[in-house]
Picture 1 (cartoon, rainbow, N blue to C red):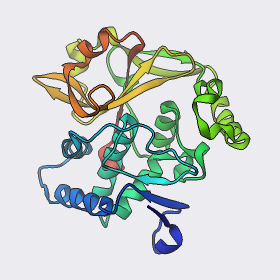
Picture 2 (picture 1 turned 135 degrees about the vertical axis):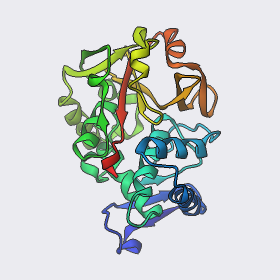
Picture 3 (picture 1 turned 60 degrees about the vertical axis):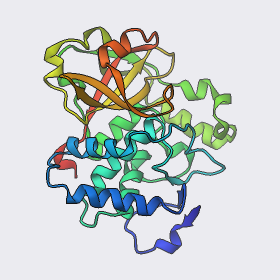
Picture 4 (picture 1 turned 30 degrees about the horizontal axis):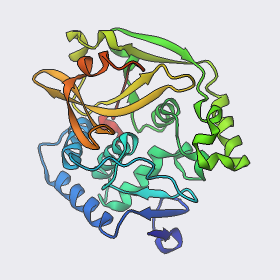
Length: 283
């Protein structure tokens, strides 16, 4: 269901259109936000992220929900992949602290998090690469990357160009203008240097001490042209950090049974993690 923004002229955010998964989307978002606002135990951004994640446990994993014949700001809390799951948590967290917590505030926050310069303007405006997603959202004050301040952090240098070098994998890139838009973005990430923590260090307790429930975890990858292959948030279980994520293997949102070190040590393509945090003054 698409709703033209001409029907929502009173809203402060500027987008071309919204696309809802179903008629109950707005009701469900408003209900979840009401529960969060009424919960006086939620004091930090991380606690809100964790609260909303618990509400979404068991939600089916569905890939490619953002794709279509045109780019909409898609509102869908019933079908999530790893990226839309984390974006949903962050947008709900920001919406919960808005002057008027509602699905309107959620949509505005989601646009700010998902798109270049915080505004939807076609497929190429979506922040497809997590490095760009992190940098832009940090610049807008939505959250902060804390990787470099954590113990055992180091730096990688990598050229990020997976989409343009695998054009046939992305139907939207058949359009030459869209393809050039992606290439223009990638030009800013030639030999891009970014911090990460090698997965061999994820068992160390001094690292645990600086992680919090609700921190965003980005799994770095050795795949050529790609920086990050998966997202989730931290959930401590018996004193160890686990990944709470939309799992393509489990086909739903879960808390992984293994801690981060055990989960990643046998993953051939994952090299480590980056950590992003919604700061308490960001909402």
